[in-house]
Image (cartoon, rainbow, N blue to C red):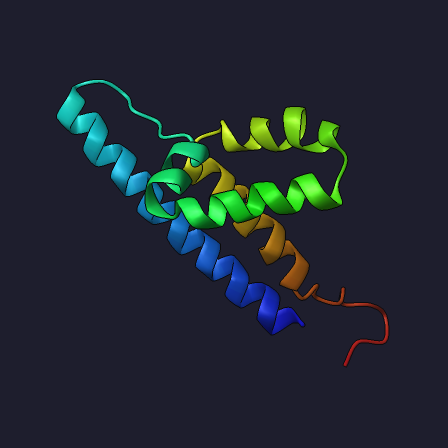
Length: 105
């Protein structure tokens, strides 16, 4: 399970770096900071999966989860959302070290 969490964390980290690079390139070209919301990035790259995601939320969860919750997350910069997801999965797959105790070998 730790291995899967670490792989998913790495995938989200790659997505975050790519989204950050795209924002950096657009910022240099525009001459001002450009932060692409996750909704815009997702709808331009894969609108079918976004529609599927919306349908799953509408059919399995109450409406208040989609309206304020998911739409707020989708309005955040894409790189930040992917970084947070990467951190969550990294922490889920992280192995804690045992403290050196009195009877440590």
